[in-house]
Amino acid sequence: MTIRAVVVGLGHYLPDRVVPNSEFEASLDTSDEWIRSRSGIERRHFAAEGETTSDLATQAAKRALADAGLEANDLDAIVLATSTADLTFPSAATMVQSALGMNRGFAFDVQAVCAGFIYAMANANALIVSGQARRIMVIGAETFSRIMDWNDRSTCVLFGDGAGAVILEAQDGAGDKTDRGILSIDLNSDGQHREILYVDGGVSTQTTGFLRMQGKEVFRHAVEKLAKTATIAMDKAGIASDEVDWVVPHQANIRIIQGTAKKLGLSMDHVVVTVQDHGNTSAASIPLALSVGVERGQIKRGDVVVTEAIGGGLAWGAVVLRW
Ligand code: UT7
Image (cartoon, rainbow, N blue to C red; front, top):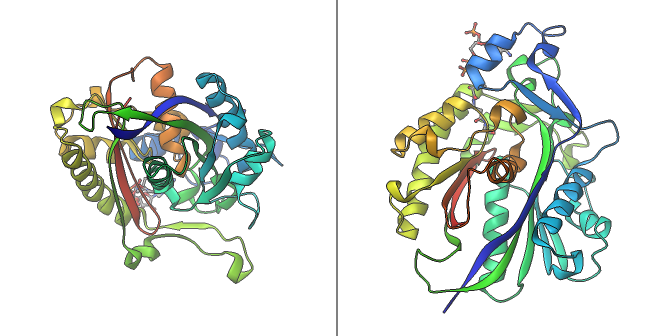
């Protein structure tokens, strides 16, 4: 018998304010046409003044609990992926724990930028398979609108705010690829590339800073590294391309998503795409896309799902699971 971490609930939350591409035309030398054709983004959500990452995460978590038919105290842990926590400390995860009325277990944040949800799933999976926790809420939540330089047209039109959450539960499996739950994981980072995607501030510099990106360079790394990490994870799970029902990629750019699918030998009919509606929400993008994919009726119980992401660090990775 093998312990598997199986998704038993999920939910997402997007702030009310929707910002179409056209809204940037008034203040920047840009156009709806440029943003759509270069990135696939049509609109994004921005958090209201005073609305924080833990607020978005709490809403997504409540929806995931309702979806699973569970109470907060049925959870053993919360693992929250974010690079835009409310405060330097405590963790946003402990704020969510308190907001949910959860008074047992433990909660912590994971910071791996756009790959954060993949890293958080890996942490949660390790806690479950090692028997340290039976039920874990894994959240990706971000307010990237807070770290945008509104004068930099090459970045500020690309990002958005949001949150998605999944609940993983320990279930017995046979130990082969027919099991539901997480089947394999591949994690990578290479700190030599930090200058191509970073925030030029932080606690030690006593500033918050703004996101800085060499888009073309990141693009180049993304297609190659995402296809490779997904292939490694699929190989570990013994899953071939024709067994993949859905790729749920990090939603940064439709051209990266298409290029990666092509390298994996998969048609876009097997890819969940939400980038047009959310923009790049960093660690929130995969759980948001999973939740929307289920809502749309794309992802169904028993499907093989491949998730992959890359972001600042560079940090990247993939998780293969059976829904
Ligand atoms: O989530 C973390 C991972 N992040 C990513 O995966 C993002 C990866 N990179 C990308 O998605 C793309 O590189 C971008 C969407 C950021 C840019 O697309 P691109 O096709 O690589 O464009 P570019 O950076 O080569 O810029 C082309 C031109 C430049 O003008 P010149 O130098 O050719 O005259 C830019 O100044 O487009 C210009 N430009 C803009 N024009 C209108 C840059 N931003 C804008 C803009 N509106 N917002």
